[in-house]
Image (cartoon, rainbow, N blue to C red; front, side, top):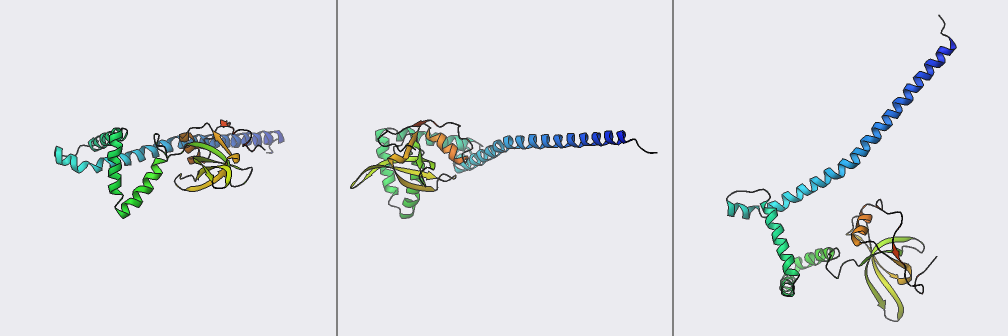
Length: 229
């Protein structure tokens, strides 16, 4: 028995609708799964990293805890270590404490291998210190590596060169692992200071620019030194 042509058309349209609905459902499910994964994965990784840090720090003083308490007490090693770090911070923020720590650093500086390792680590950490004067000063935009192309970096100092009236900005351009990058001296006229906190600049660089706001708050240089295009 022949099927009417109208029935074939309706059947084909019905199958097409089912297929289209199935594709939409699969797309929706895939989108929802990826969205959930992007939310859960950073939380899970952060929790795991914090857990590993907790275990590592707790194990540092675990032998001392066992010696004093006769058994291992999870978390006590971390608590004691945090108290020690806080105490060192309190000592380091007063004049006598700074002199005492300076003497200790001077003694440790006489150990050849330790001196190089300690100096490198301390220099890196000083860059992120909220109270140190040797850290990153400001987040800047500099015309680097070529004119007209702005790169985000951190201002470390203003310098002048013998025989050159131009003032230069010492700018560190980190890669996305932050501790490796390029340091360059950029003429003041090619540098724009921003109002972004250093912590915000670090977050933007580590995210590869994904957290970049649509409008950057900048402080323009004086007209006589600002190179406007």
